[in-house]
Length: 150
Figure 1: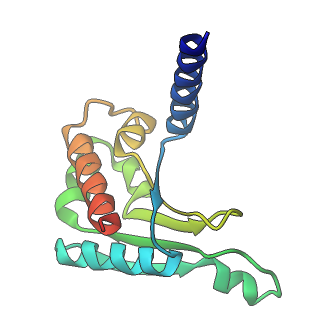
Figure 2 (figure 1 turned 120 degrees about the vertical axis):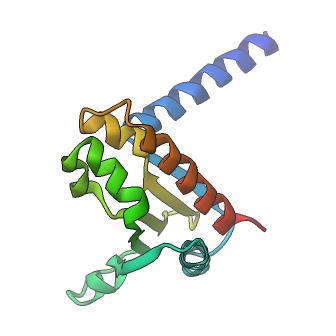
Figure 3 (figure 1 turned 180 degrees about the vertical axis):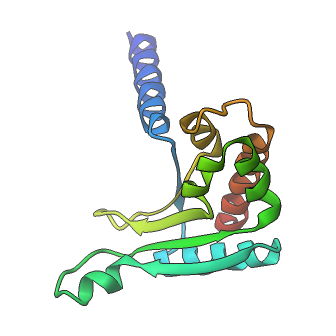
């Protein structure tokens, strides 16, 4: 019976992972505060030679209208070396570029780092076989891993 419960738990976890992946958002748990996660991510992005175009602090924006949000910030970054080949596959990918990452704190005070999966974006724009999508996927995973490393 214990084995059956374990098997059911594994299947449910796999289904939850698939459901999360279905929307094209890759989400990684951060061991750091939202501010530190963003700073670390931005530093890694710059160290890898990418341009940071903007940081959008949604919590600060909410405060301007008297509302309150937990820490929620987007960083917009990239470079033509990665984006141009992706747009050569389908120019409509340009609506999803430059790349973005979202760092937020949930209602349990857990911080998360999320970004759009380039393979999902390639599929969305009808170019699922675009070879640069996998390269961008690996690059984003590497950025997240480096930013969240101890």
